[in-house]
Image 1 (cartoon, rainbow, N blue to C red):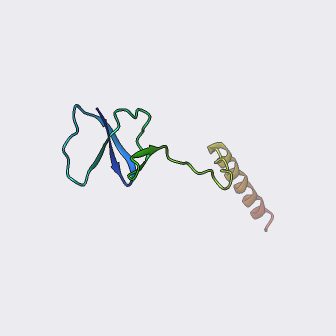
Image 2: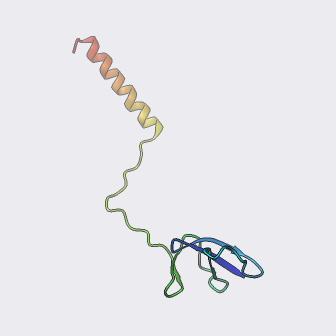
Image 3: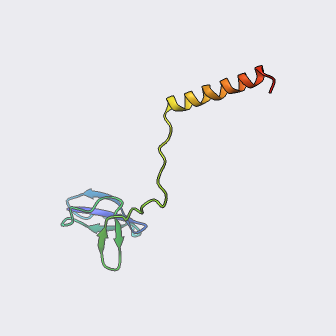
Length: 91
C-alpha cells in the first residue's frame, strides 16, 4: 500500500507500508495506492479528497541572469583602473 502524510494541505511525505501505520491522532495519512501520479508537495483538498499538482505562478517580470564570476571580476578590475586613473590626474 502507498500512503501520503498530509501536512498544511499538502502531500508532505509519501511512503509504502504493508498496512496503514498507527501514528499520533493529529497525523493525517491518506491511502494513495491507486494514485501513482501523486508526488510530495502536491496540494490536497480535504473536502473532496483529491490531489492536484501545485500551481507554479509565472513571474511577473523576466528574471535577469546573474553575472558570471569572470564578468564580476572584469567589472571590478575596470572600476579599480578608473579609480586609479582619476587619482593620477587629480580628480
